[in-house]
Image (cartoon, rainbow over all chains, first blue to last red; front, side, top):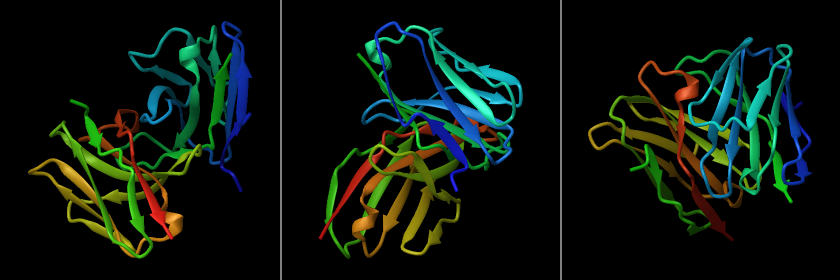
Length: 114
Length: 112
């Protein structure tokens, strides 16, 4: 059974039209992450939540926001998608943030911007 | 210089071959290392952690060379199903998971 679930698998949006990607987890993990991965590039961390505490990466554009209404769900909001935001968006979870904690990834949402 | 650097490949090898990938890291304070496997358009999945003394899991062996600041992954008796991108991941000493740095990956194609 999938433990980190992302919907939808593929998302198409228009330039400038707000879009929300969703992630849910059945692992009851404390930490949830959002990564952006462009073609042939490394996954890049956008931000993460430790419980309700939001932690933004310094170079994450303001265009990207996130919400975590409860332990199980986390959303990625892109307020005004540009062509350069087309990418795979990966949600991940972990129990904690210690050095040897394992990351569990969802299957990702492939975002296209037209 | 990238913090974690990998040869992008592709590495084209016949079934049954042994193949090795290296990954260099620039931050000498890096202490935790992992290899992830990522299939095309799918999520990364943890393949194995890399321990200081080296570790083996079936056909896969991971090594860490702190003096030269690289880690390696050796795959013996390659299978068609091993075809994927292998991501090297490093993290700082005492660092949190949000400090993990992913490499861009090395593409392996195992040919019949």
